[in-house]
Length: 247
Image (cartoon, rainbow, N blue to C red; front, side, top):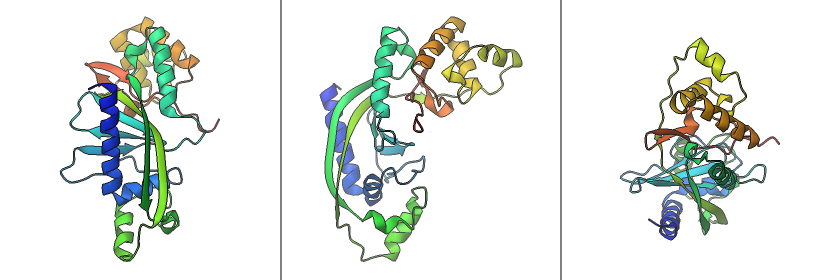
C-alpha cells in the first residue's frame, strides 16, 4: 500500500468512526478537557477498527492492515505535535544509523471533518476527569430528547507507523545488570530499568551507549513497557516523543 492509499484509507476509517460513534464525536469536540481512558474508544461489534487514546493522541488500528497503524494528535497541550516530533527524531536516527531501534513513522497528510455533536456543556457533570462509555450511555438513556445540534470542525495531521507486536519485558534482572545499566545516563532508564537491560541484552553495550547518547540529545523520556514493541522479532520504541507538557 503506497502513501496515497494509506492516507485515503485512514480518512475513510475516521469518517466511519465519526459517522457511527456519538461517543467518539463527543471525544473529538472536547479533546483536551478530560483524560481519555487508555482503552478502545470505539469498540464496535464485528468491527475491524480499533481506536486507542493516550495522553494527547490516538492510534487507529485496522485489523485488515498488518503492516501499519495510523496516529494523530487530538490535543497539543504545549503546542507541539508529538507525531511531528517523532518524524524529526526518526530522521535524525536515520542519519545516526540508529533508526532500527524506532518504529518507522511517515507523514501521510491532513484530515478535516465537519460534524454535529452534543454540546460539550452537556457532559461537564458526567466526565469529571476521564471518558467513560458507561456514563455516556447512561446519559443518553436519561436524556432521550437530547439532540446533536452543535456544529464542530476537527482537523489533524495523519501519520503512519510500522505496526509492532507487544513486547514482554523480563522483570527478574540481577543486581549486576541493574548496576551496569545505571552506570550511564539513558532515556531507557526513565520509567523502568528492565527496558534498558532488555535493550543491552539484545543489542549489546556499545549500542546501548550510542542509543543513550542520542536519546539524551533529543530529550527522549517516558519510556515504559507500553512504549516498547517488537518488529521483525526485534525490540523497538513505538512511542518516543517523550513527555514535555510542563515545559
